[in-house]
Length: 342
Ligand code: TXA
Ligand code: MG
Image 1 (cartoon, helix red, strand yellow):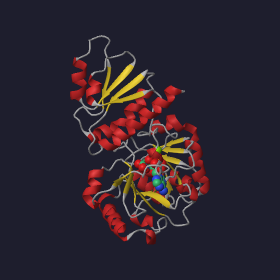
Image 2 (image 1 turned 45 degrees about the vertical axis):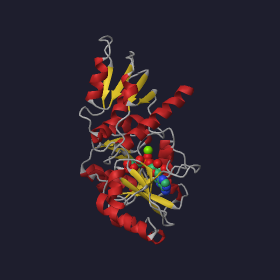
Image 3 (image 1 turned 180 degrees about the horizontal axis):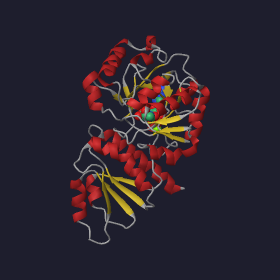
């Protein structure tokens, strides 16, 4: 693995590698992605292998301009009303943390879409990602650059420690801005459906196009494996609590307590004996959901490497980005449960 800077020479080197079918991890505003040429089945196969990702879990294709949609999407199959909504969302939020699932052109390889008739497409809002896509092939498939089911990387170090020599290049663009993955919106049918809450909140989407449906009809295969119950998970057992329940916890040595804001952590601390000193963390001292999202995976990465017996986390308010944060925490918890059962 070669670690690159985000200077132009280094981006050019990674772009050449992508053209030659190699993989490069790169920063986006949400999380780091593991990129490969979306039209090269060998590169796509390598992505699945490196991540140990099941083939039924399709990839997001990243583009660096709105024109980049044309080679990927069959616009003739989009419902007229949905098309108007798509244009409005593109106008308002692209580039940004919003992914569209749209009818695909036949040329898009099945490996990118897991054989589905739709493709997920995103125009990321990050200068390094945009430059890399532009200088390579214009369409880069990139899942989050972590082993399947594990915490998503928000720094180049996370990618290096999780994937190491399994990836050819890592471009270091520093810590990401948003911290949770993009919101995935299915716009391939007559209704607009949110398949995964993420970095663009539902309220802003609905203010732009009116109500959207949530997730899939019961009984269907998960259309977005980000919807699988366990995902985004640390190895250390993680438990999630409502504010009231969190306040009743007693401090146990070797366990970490993660609060939403300073108010919660200080109130809880005031009820603990002085010794032993608890391991306390806050996602955002002043209660900002966007700061909490930006810190979330990074804090969980650090705690997961601290040989703790357990991580106790307070749920955040369920508005704005809180929906995506609680979703990731819920899945982190489910995974911890399955580790306990082993
Ligand atoms: O923010 C992000 O979206 C990051 C950065 C790197 O852009 N990428 C990311 O990719 O989170 P990944 O592969 O970890 O998640 C992609 C999600 C999965 O839940 C996948 O199932 C869903 O998008 N997806 C992809 N194609 C789909 C399709 N055709 N239909 C439904 N869901 C799809
Ligand atoms: Mg992922």
